[in-house]
Image 1 (cartoon, one colour):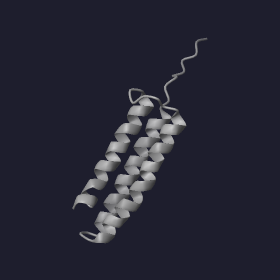
Image 2: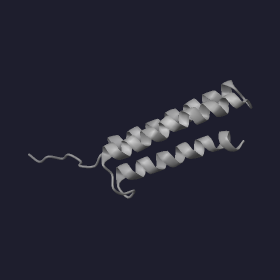
Image 3: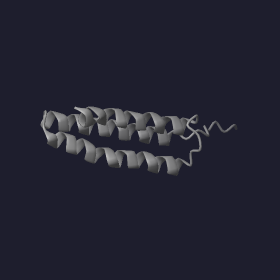
Length: 92
């Protein structure tokens, strides 16, 4: 019998996108709970640091050396999404 296992690490990009989705959801909840208040900005800043830390941890965990791999691309897209999500809180 043949072994049809895929050698690509799909767990890392899935976790990275999950962190991005959780970060976005929590920022949206904070901006809904505290509209136009500085508390929402502080919450956004406080949640961004652990999210970017999780991206760094996933990068080291996956032992990724290139952004052209599936795990590297998933982490890069998620990290850009996290930074893009926090921009309205920082700028506005």
